[in-house]
Image (tube, rainbow, N blue to C red; front, side, top):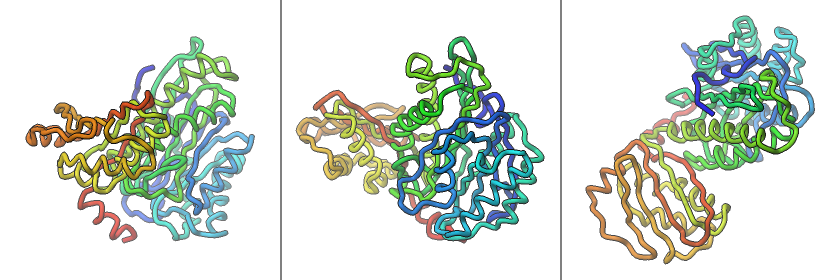
Length: 407
């Protein structure tokens, strides 16, 4: 497997376009269209929030069905959440606009939205946006990059990646894009992510791979503890790589799953690092825990704590905050077994050793924590399970961004 240039259009047969539809933002693109030349099998994960956006409910039905998926329309600026029947009507109108322009059955069109909750989408602008994008679909890398920029809200950078690997002698490509900066604390997925591959694979196996990988990647990031109403990840596979179709688990399935894990982890970390107001990536790795569930619980508790996030922002090696977060996480452990370290490209420093604090060099700690990415590394000495979670520091800018989000 190797990383290659591009994103959602990297795989054979995938095209993209973007448009400035004027839905909320002025002077920038705010709609994206992803289209596969061949109908795809699809898989997806969606928010566990009981308050689900209209588009989430629309997409869940499509992914659950056996109908092929061939296009996804995404808008930024307005979330289409808490919008009642009018919200569903907007989803249908968008999908039917694609049907009219691209001859794709409207039930084969997924829709996704991100932005302000509780506002109605301007259907005329959505339809006009679809019309503009359908006319300029392109399979270039640049078209995919432009699409990844169009779905941004408070993101400061676009997020995309692609990899190439081999299945039974055939070159296969998997590419994707995501957006997310705030309201990120996933339970099924996080914010918006779209993956396209030319792999031939059975739908049920694609769904199993996606669900498994999301649990260890997108579900292990947090920015602010808020699980969005719109969280959606959709993976489309069109089979144009012409590999022998994957119909059972084995070497080919494992090769694809490894590529999927690489892509999803990369996109998840890009989202965590670009958390609203963030100045650095905050990683927590827990090793030698009693169980995988404990390792996940402990690592997510560390990166979720506002006090921990503030310490990372202030470059303060206040290890008690991280131990405190572990203590209320719900995982059972003996603090007298725990070792805790701070790590970055600038070095590694042990600060807590099996129930006892260690006298450490504060200047060394400051140097380590000033890096753009800081890891809290915890050895539980109670088993052999491990997990990593990703978040970001908590800065003054987070409050500024969210205090006037609607304006």
